[in-house]
Length: 297
Image 1 (tube, helix red, strand yellow):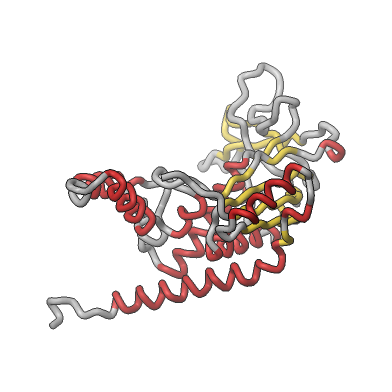
Image 2 (cartoon, rainbow, N blue to C red):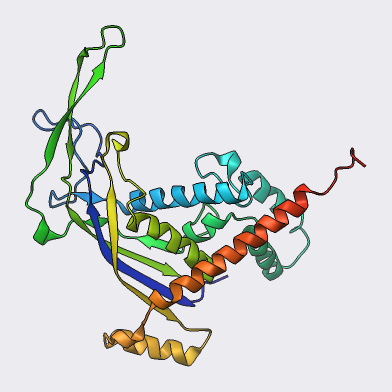
């Protein structure tokens, strides 16, 4: 089954460090320099991997959904543990062996797709999983060149001896941080997302806008507080209209800004669609939990 272009949301903005940021590149092997340097691009400038931003965003949304829907792995899976995925390899293999034995190839693909989608947790619909592609893409965040002067900060760390409550021998180290106030360019794209999935994303991005999701290491020490400021949200929905899609492509080539709409006006509706979906899932869970068991009858 081939994917079909339906809609696209482009988000651009600036992510600024409110406090110093440390996303480590691992222990340095250089004889001179920081023990724990920050990750840098090929030009030696600081870099925030898109995977770091996306992972922190996904983790926060999963924590919200667990608070709303409980630890039902079919609704909120755990990407860190294979057995806690919403759809495990064992379940997928079992479905392939049994219900798909005696049906045609085309029907088999439709049946498998339906099975996968119906057994995929909410966050994985947007962020992806081993069995479903991500609809949300984040570029690596590069520092704005006009605001970067090549200055890193070096900080010291030390392990404390629990008996003497003093610095342990040979446990002194230093680490590098990106200074507070450093701005990074933010670019993200969402394609073929449903309204409720976009609502989930809006709630997650709002957490970054309000400085509630820190990044990198040393967060318990106050490091990694960042603030996202969104400049533009450009939206196009072709609505299964081939002529509209052709017009959109023509405008893109001409770099005509009218190819997109301002998505700001859609945010509230997307969030409402998500809330309605979650309320429905809560009601369904309550009905299931209130069904009397066989032993109690």
